[in-house]
Image 1 (cartoon, helix red, strand yellow):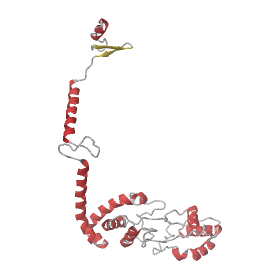
Image 2 (tube, helix red, strand yellow; image 1 turned 120 degrees about the vertical axis):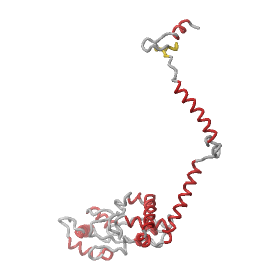
Image 3 (cartoon, one colour; image 1 turned 180 degrees about the vertical axis):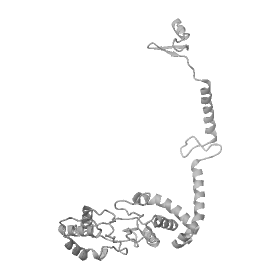
Image 4 (tube, helix red, strand yellow; image 1 turned 135 degrees about the vertical axis):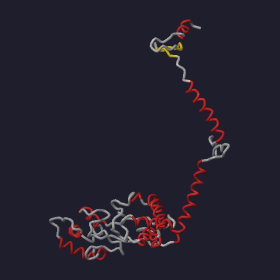
Length: 296
């Protein structure tokens, strides 16, 4: 052995008082500080534990699966069992909902509680993306918390809307209404649109353009809009025509937005949930939406 190396291996570091290993790099000597025994003990125990885990539990991937282990446990199988148990429990709870009418559900505290729980879950899974977590909606999506409804806010009306949607081409019972594109289709000229747009603002008690011809707008409204929205602009839930006097609209009541609506029309679509959700879930969702605060 190199005497110089032997010398270094027995040297004591002056700063720490720990012997060196004899290794040196660029004047830096390595201290001989082995790992603590408690740490080594834990490390070796984890090795033993891992070997035991490989034997007892599924762990090694195979071409079409994994080793099953001695006990044959699998989280996927456990989840499947839990889901089956949950579905069985829900089925027993939902049995009453299936047979009861909407009025009976609202009158029975136990059925109402079950319907609210299932309806809230269904709303979170299917409706939140458009209507928001609390049902407050947004531009182009109705607020379900107020008492302003295009097609009615009774339980039966809500169930009909949920079941068949709005403007769904593949559903013969879907809700259908049509706001004409008065400007794009050449029905009204630009100055006529400006006049009737200001009249709509006036119906809602909102400020109008000082130069607007409100008398002309009132006449144009009577000739072209009153058939759907009513002479006073109160709307018509039979046709899905909104009430223009409450300043609540899907797209906004500012003058540019009203002008855009009159010019190009509107035609939002709501999915028909009947083909996607079972009747009991539709019923529970109806109860939940009706309870948000805007039900009639």
